[in-house]
Amino acid sequence: MMIPDLKKCILLLALAVLLAACNSSPFMKAQPTANFTSTPSIQLQPCQLGNTSAQCGTLKVYENRAAHSGRMIELRVAVIKAQSDHPAPDPIFYLAGGPGEAATEDAAKGQQLPYSLSNNHDLVFVDQRGTGGSNRVLVPTDQPDVTGLTPEEMDTVFKEWVAKFLEEIDMDPRFYTTSVAMDDLDKVREALGYDQINLVGYSYGVTAAQYYLRQHEEHVRTVFLYGGSLLDTPVFERWAYNSQRALDIIFDRCLADPACQTAFPNLRAEFTALLTRLATQPVTESFTNPTDQQPGSITYTPDYFAAVIRHMIKDAKYHPRLPLLIHRAYEENDWQGITQFILANGGYEWWGSQVMDHVIRCSEKWAAFDPEAVARLSEGSYLTGWDVSLAQNQALSCKYTPHGETPEGMDPQPGSQAPILIMNSEVDPIDPPDNMAGAEALWPNSIALAIPYQGHSISDTGSIMCMWSLMDEFIQTGSAEGLDTDCLKKIQPPAFVVPKTQVLPTPTKVESPEMPARAALTGMPASVSTIHLKPIFKTI
Image (cartoon, rainbow, N blue to C red; front, top):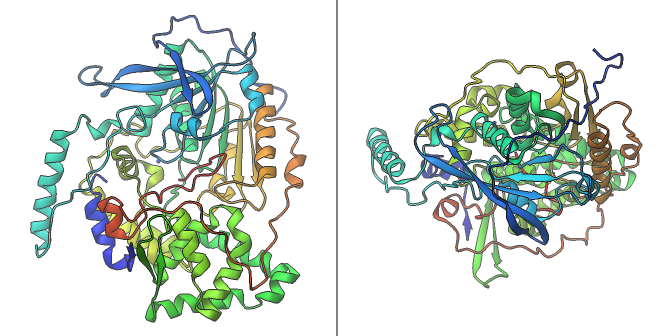
């Protein structure tokens, strides 16, 4: 497995993925309503979501919802029925991350919601159109050979290739945007016989929840949002800036910790010097893949190393070792720990393999990724060069990607009176608390809380339990007023690893060299888009 200088081969990535986001109290409390009386049109049958018993079925909807004619697609739906004999009338609809994750697959991987909520609420999982069991279509990996062609000839070849692909697939990519998908979700709500629902969204699921709120507020009882951004916030254009902010927090914590400061007093200078050195002296690390004993290698350049660091700081469980790994790479040219992380988790994150992911990223306001805006907003970030390259290649890829239906256009995000609980992690390099700035003015019945010391993905048990206790109280009461937030004050920072003899544990997940062509071209392990945790809180 070769992981080459990505800046040299990033153009190949773009070309390989051409189809390729008035009460006296200031808070309003949601009131349960009687069960909706329409007859469900989804025939549910017993099924298993991992180890959990559920009821599954499908709902047919028009692909072109506006025309109400033409091709129909099936949406996969799973319901975990409430355990109580007298459940609340308002279910919880789980919205997956990504874009590209499938809600039913998330449910099968592990617990997504506190058990207490399943006692008296149905839990509903719907695979968004284009994912999972809802007409998932993958981008092609058999890209044409453009060796020796001029830019004009390449353009012609790829236009013809895309046209041929579109003729062969059972999909019109234009109708796989978030706004269309949230109309699907409302149709599922109606078909299952619910009136008001509670929305729970993680990461991109936060984006989806806001779309549903905008389009169907009358059916929303409460909204819980973790690890997301407001729709008017350009997540990807702020990606490098927010990653620098997260890294600075980790560095500041190290320098404020006596043991870490003593062990790594020049941490910032070493990191900067390491990036400078890699620019002229890239480092190639060889290894033996434990899966099949085949040899492989990774080449560290400044941009690739920067992307790996961002991937590493997504989850706070890797923060304690970060100063140690940077110091070893700088002082001893020891890349073993960082290489182990890559083998276990992948080196960086980029587009998924599903067509809907590409359409959303190329069409929706929140997913804007203009190279000039990236350069301006990320000035001074260790990721500026990498993210500008990504933005340039997204622009190239979007040139060939059908533009999705976005009736919301560029309109500013509207407000809402629905009760909303917003939670972001303090050290999130993707969706930090600042990306939700202004939410409480937009949503007067909301409260925004920060989980200290955590990243975008959470694996710390105490942090998860705190978040779930707040989610449970919020949904059960139907109000963001008076929540008991004391558990947030009890979350402790992870202790830094300072002994020079300590290394990362042997990875438990290693990707095979037998990977899709798209991944092989970029040196990216095939399953790089998500670090899977238990519970799983996903990507962008």
